[in-house]
Amino acid sequence: MTSEKVTLSNGDPVSPDHREIDPATGQQRGYVVLSSEERAKGFVRPLRDSYRHIKCNQVTRMGRSIAETFARDPSFYSGTFCSQCRAHFPIGEDGEFVWIPTGEKVGT
Image (cartoon, rainbow, N blue to C red; front, side):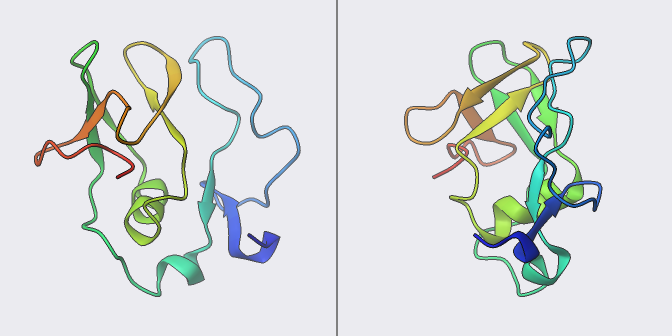
């Protein structure tokens, strides 16, 4: 992955401190996404912006650039955030998140 193919979700360049956690929200300072040019190449999966955390039953909605990154490259992320638990968790076959409305595991 080269730096010109990724940015932060707000469009800023990826910074060394982007993974710092805001104690008030549990979220990172910034989230890495594929660049708009990479996302414009098309999606290999449907564009979905909501998922449910099976453990707490909360639905979390993603920003568009993050959702488009998932749709363009489903293996781009190894984890995701739960807005109820205010924490990050792994995704994939063993993960605790399913897409709304299909119920497919996030990251598979």
